[in-house]
Image 1: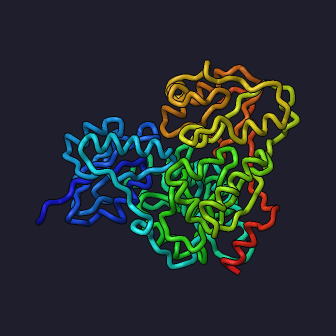
Image 2 (image 1 turned 135 degrees about the horizontal axis):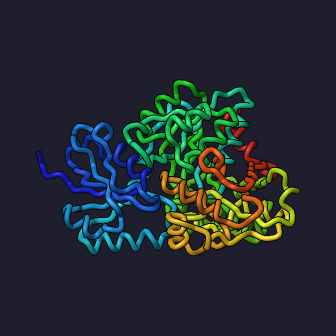
Image 3 (image 1 turned 120 degrees about the vertical axis):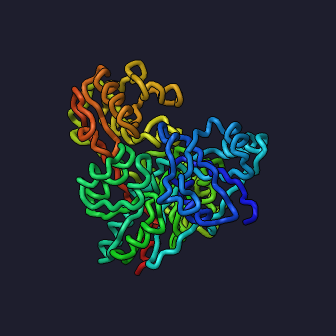
Length: 439
């Protein structure tokens, strides 16, 4: 056998595994010596198991912490490092490239063409330029519309495999009990619960070839519900890229959201009802410059707080979707918008009450000053979130995470939930583009 190229896959428990499965697994000219992990606390130190890695890796593949990158490259004699995660600035990518090259390895990317899996049924892919743009509400809107046309629709969600990878190979969600059956984290519950409550079937896991073949058995149409701003794992027949006017420049500053923007069939500008018009127009300008063939669609994100009259004049704490606040770089989300709309007296600064891993998150993400990220990737994070919320001196907790916090934590004060849905009220509409695709 000729010498195998020693490859390191730089990841964050998602795209990295997909790149391995579609490009490297089974190749006798390449040896993937390790994965690295970043962004999510506690996902390093695991092993990609032999059952998923294949016969060439009888001991599996180690998953190491990216912070040790130069040492890993030297000790494992890495020849090539393949960048394989999302929602990072272009500056971050090039800084990582510099560290990799300085340590003596090539820095490379895979193309979508190399990693796409082709569906046997029509595929709508929903992606974004940043995490927190509104992919999930867009996906649910598309599914609702297609189901109204009597189509059998199945969603497949971008991976969030933060636990036992072998058990997470193929997951199918249809009932709320499935969230406990698969021991879902808060982030997973944020994504899966709204689908289940809407009557949708959703798949996720680690092996996306196996996942797709199972989903095809019960679908007329499949909708890819993307994660972060990653590109689709599947070759789309219709690609919808969601943008956020509050981060209007993301289409040209972040990877791989810029790729999604350039390749979109439909560019959807969400949150038009709450964003400055100048920022909405900026995205339209970028679309004309970067992807003039795309149809640009505006949409509102309707934000509703249960019993808003009960919090008027009250002191509140606000919990938001975790990834949107952390590596999404947003200082607030739908919860703060709902609190301001309800005319609360004030929003508590939660930082002085934070404990453990929640306090560490504030140190790591200093732009968070009035909002609590719903972090729950591990049992310890959930316990620290519970203690932090119970320590806060306020009248009410406003929760804008789609997960039901009351299922996971016991809070000593009332919790009011925020829901947000896509409103397709402009011309051209998203519906008009879907109807061209599937009459």
